[in-house]
Amino acid sequence: MDKYKKLAFNTVIFAAGSFGSKIFSLLLNNLYTKHISPSGIYTKTMLETLALFLLPVFTFSLTEAIIRYGLDNRYKKKQVFSTSAVIMLAGLAAMILFVPLLHLIPVLRRITGYSALLYIYVCTSSLRALCSQFVRARNMVKLFSLDGIFATMTLFLFNIVFISKLGMDVKGFMISMILSDTCSALFLFIAAGLGKFADIKSFSAPLGKSMLKFTLPLIPTTIIWTFTGFSDQLFVGNMHSDKVFLGDDAAGIYSAATKIPNLLSMLSTIFYQAWNMSAITENDSAGRDRFYTRVYSAYESVLFIGAAVLILLIKPVSAILINYSTFPEYSTAYIYTPLLITAAVFTCLNLFLSGIYTATKHTKNAFYSILAVALTNIVLNLRLIPVCGIQGAAFATFLSYLLCYCIRIIDARYFVPFDFSVIRTVLNTVLLLLMCIPVIFSFRGCLYWEILLTAAICALNYSSIADTALKLLKKERA
Image 1 (spheres, rainbow, N blue to C red):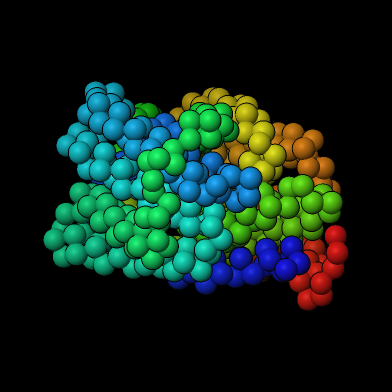
Image 2 (cartoon, rainbow, N blue to C red; image 1 turned 90 degrees about the horizontal axis):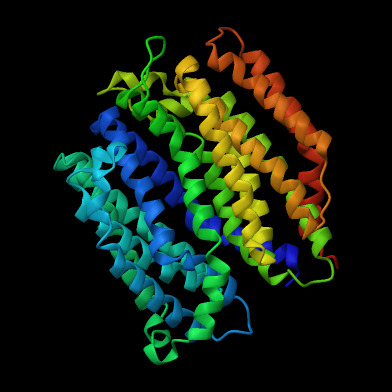
């Protein structure tokens, strides 16, 4: 199959399986904001973020290696699965000594009483990731997508039971996640016949060493990336100011606001699942650079257009995803989303560029770039939040991810020298920032201004999308 058509086919398959599930996940935010207070949402987000910290540390980020090595025909899939499983299980066993100590850290005092649930959540999440990523590595994209629907449906049902019906708020959320991940892992293990790949005799120490060498730079990268994404809420929740609204409730409102840009991230995640596979399999092809140029151009254009439309429709979208009926404080969350949406564009572009590091096995470069971003983000948060409050956190996030993009677009192109338009990227960014201003400052009567800017972004990006669409309509050698 032509590589453009293969990428498009995989994207459609992932979209078919993921779109409905992602929409359900976003709608769950409505349920959470109806039944959980802003302070509770802050605790929920902290637990989710801690899980994201613990996963790469105690599973050694091996889920990334499963894709990279599983798609490589030079390695036996049985060895890849068995070796990954043994190493991950050993790491999870060691984690049991660490988790109970987390609540002793002052900023993590809110997780007191959740240690056992957090440990079980990380275990079930890692087992599901092991199964799902290996399924992808076997090119079973339809089953992978079907599992996405299944997992979200079970999560939705469990949330209805434990949060809406039983009123268990944050604990109900954790139990729902644990049960959903467990059901998903069992479904994949049985449906994909993973039992025949699980064999302790197939454990390969040399392969494990090679995989760990590949993933070890990813561990600090993932940790720092997660911290950068959550540090805003930590600062908002723990800093104090007489000038602006800060504290636990403010952090909860900010957390609710971050869910709206997930609409954009949803599209990116669907594409990236397919793109990551293409980037690995096409890494040694003759037309690799031109392939990257065309795909990146279209991808960037879709992101900027999607962001513009989302900002244009921010009020109705916010009303759907955030429930104000029980806790009216959430009604202001949409004001903080435009800058977060703009930041999400660069998060998605950074994800694309990180695929180059994965495909070419230069994962250390991803670490260097995110380390610079994390340090910048901390400095910006310390300076901006006491003065601008929640909006300062959003602006710090945007500037940090923009910096990451600037570093990676220069560095990653040393390994895959694809072309891109600096002028178009700058113009797109400026137009998006101009769209943010009326929402942030609550200007009235600016709908026509927003429509005009959205039209300008669509016009600016139309040609690159149309060009890539034509490549899909006719087979071309590249």
